[in-house]
Image 1 (spheres, helix red, strand yellow):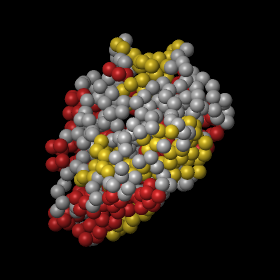
Image 2: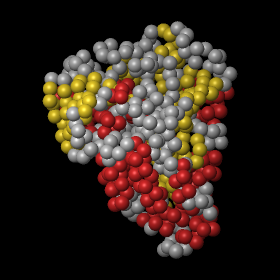
Image 3: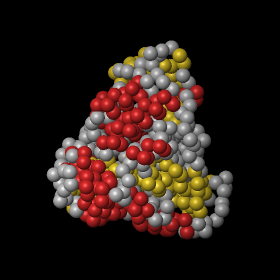
Image 4: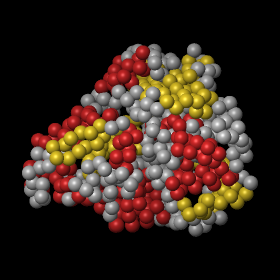
Length: 524
C-alpha cells in the first residue's frame, strides 16, 4: 500500500477570499479579551427537520450536526486540503479500492439516554459508516462495498470501484460517528436526540423554534470558550436582521437582499460576505407533465431572463447570474461553457414552444421554500408574459418541500445547492441517475452518456486536470438537456455582532465555532 497522509492531499482550486463589510460599527479587534462562557445565539433561516446524519437534507441541519458530531477526516479552513479528525492517518491500497484508517484512542461519546459517555471504538466507526453507505437519503457515502474492523483502533473501508472523491465524501456531516445504542434506543426519534463525539452536546430540540447545545466538557479536542449555543429558527429575513440588531441573536445567517444593506449600515454589527459554493436553480420535472418534452424545457429556459431575476432579488448585491451547475470555486468550472446556456429571447422561445403540444401555454405548479418566493414571483411573471404559461407558486416549509421534491412530485421547484469544490458533489448528486429519488435529482434526470462520464471521472486514475476535462464533457451533455434553469451564484453572508470574536463566514456556509485554529467567543 502507498501511504496517504491527510495533510499531503491537496485539492487545487482558486482560493476564495472573505471580504468583511462594516457599517458604523466600532473597529474592535477580535484579539480583544473574551470571557470564558456565555451562550452564543445563532439565527437559522429554515427549520432543521432531522439531525439524524442519514436523514438530513440541508445546510441548516448540517450546521447543527457539525457542532455535535465529527468525521474521520475533515477539510482545512480554506477547503484546500484534507486533514485528520477522528482518524489519525490512513493508507490507500494500490488498486485504490481499500482505505485503512487508524483511529484516535482518546475519543468519548457525549452522555446520552442509552450510554454514559463511553469510549468510541472501531466497531462504532464500522456501524456509523455502514448507515450512510447503505441507508442515506442523499447518497452521502455511495460506492462502499463493506466496512471491516481490522484492529483495535483500525477500520478498513472497501469500495466497489475506485472513487477519487471518497475521502472528500467522508467529510460530510452525514458520515459522523455515532453510538449504536442511541440510534437503536431512540429509533425514528434519534434525529431529535443526536449524540456524537463533537465539542457540543444537544440539550433541547424544539422543532420550528430553537435548538440548544452545551459545551462538551469531555471533548478530546480544543475546548470551546462558550458555555453553549442556541440556534433560533427565524425564517423571515426581516425578522432575522431585526433580531441581530436588537441583540436577540449574535449571528444572523443567510443575510440576503435588502437585509444586507440593513446590516451594513447598522451600528455594533458587521456584514461578513464571501464568494460561496452555493448555486440556485429551477428544476423541471423530467418524468411527468409538460416539461417531459425537451422542447418545452428549452422554450422555458429561453423565455427566462435570468439577469432580471438575479438583479431583482439581489438589488443590494450578494449574487451574480449563473451559467453552470458548478460554482466558480469548483476546480471543474469552465467559463467557456456559459455559451451553452440559451440566450434570453422571448420571440424564439415562442417559436420553440409552437413546435410542441403546448403552443398556447399551460398551467404548472412551482414549489419553493419561503426564502425563494422572490425568485418564483419574477419567474411567474416572465412565463405568463412570454409564453402564456400560468405558474402557481406553492410555498412549503423546508421538510415538506424536501420530501415533495425528492419524491418527484414537484412539477417545477427552485432549489439551492452548496457542497465542496469537487464537481462530484454537484454533478453526481444532481445529474446521475443513481441519485433519482433524492433531493438533488428529484426531477428524475437520466442520461446514460452522462452517467458513464460521471462514473469515469469518479473512478479515474487521472489527475485533477484530466478529471476536470471529463466533467466538462459531461456538462456539455447536461446543459444541452435543459433539465433545469441555472439562476444564480450566491455569496455566503452573515451578520455578526461586535460582541462575537473569532467567527468567520466561509464559502461552504458552514458554521465553525471551535476547531484547530478557531475558537469563537463572546467579548466582555
